[in-house]
Length: 212
Image (cartoon, rainbow, N blue to C red; front, side, top):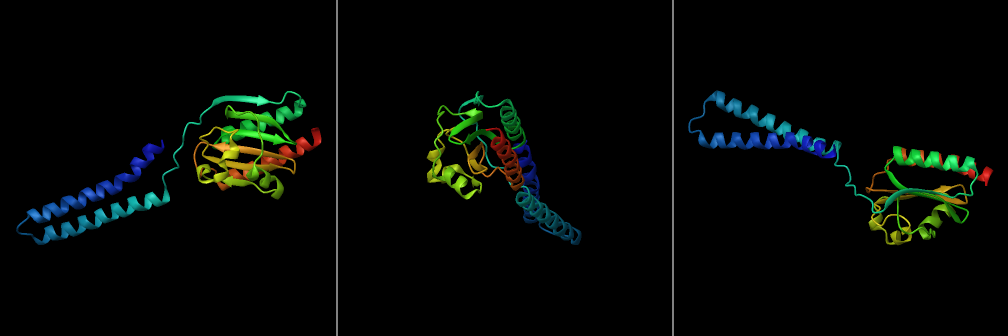
């Protein structure tokens, strides 16, 4: 679908450029220009310029979406078995919402020193040790969004996510937990996504504090 949109955005530029080129060739090959030919050439040049300008505006208004990749790993669900049924249901429900309604392809829920949930595309590394970035999110109680993971030296701490994960959000769950979400495309989480993720984390924090 994105490829089709990219082609459609190019059509006005291609048509306008082709039309302008044909007008120029026609002018060069015409020895004696009549008044109506001059008027036609001017009108044609204006139309071509409008087409090219429209195409350029479309490029700005509808920018090319970020390139996505297929995350390396196997799809799965790992849920701590000793959790109360209510907590298991909450984790399953919230993680399903994130995987189906946002660009999230893999996620980990860490709480009070252990992993409660791994879901989506899973890396081979099962042990989760929070690094400096994740710990800072908990300490500051503010989410950290790494829009393009490759750009950050601290990306190595996320070895429990697929190694070609493109973007990561570290979302605090109260003061004792963290939800780590990975996407398969850089710069793909919108502000609305971030707000919604924060709301789900707040609801999950309330459940975990009451039940654990």
